[in-house]
Length: 243
Ligand SMILES: [Zn+2]
Image 1 (cartoon, protein in one colour):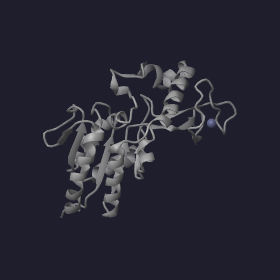
Image 2: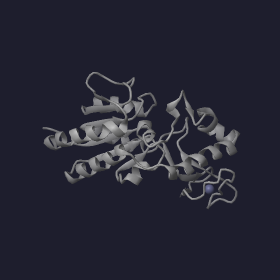
Image 3: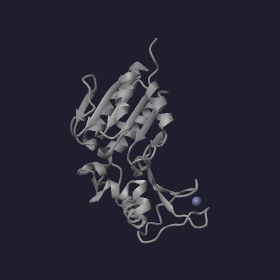
């Protein structure tokens, strides 16, 4: 018996890059000139929270200067197409910006956290805020007396979010797409392998062939904003035939 169609899409830095947002993967582990170990680890926050806070406040402020691109828009249209045909859809992003939700994505999980959110360094309090982006001033936790809010970003050495749900979706999916991702950062780099193992058809879009590509993956080279709309448009009718 054929399995009912089910789609998982993983997006990475290439999708944000086409809106003008720099990321860690751009230049040898640097993000806006900063090393990962100086701004994106729990140890960096413990050692120099002012530097880390300033870095993320600047990234948070920069969100208001960018807009979603054609890849974001095409993913929204594809999600609506899937849901209109009762095809389960999940968009998993490694990106920490809010461009997918601003484009209109609904079934979206940020596995590495979100710049739009802050969380207490001590308790479980979380706060969505993009208005307070002064890089010189820490924000206090609304619940604790003296604790500070930190970026709700999954730093290196911390556990990515939503992994149980993502792993279930990968085990069930019949079609998996990796878009704009380098294929070198785990655990996301393992999703392609997991989808193959569950028998899904696999599609990979990236500027260059990623390291985790296999012969059976359908590979599309190019910029996300240019190649993703065509890839999704060609996939939509295939899905409907198979669902
Ligand atoms: Zn707190």
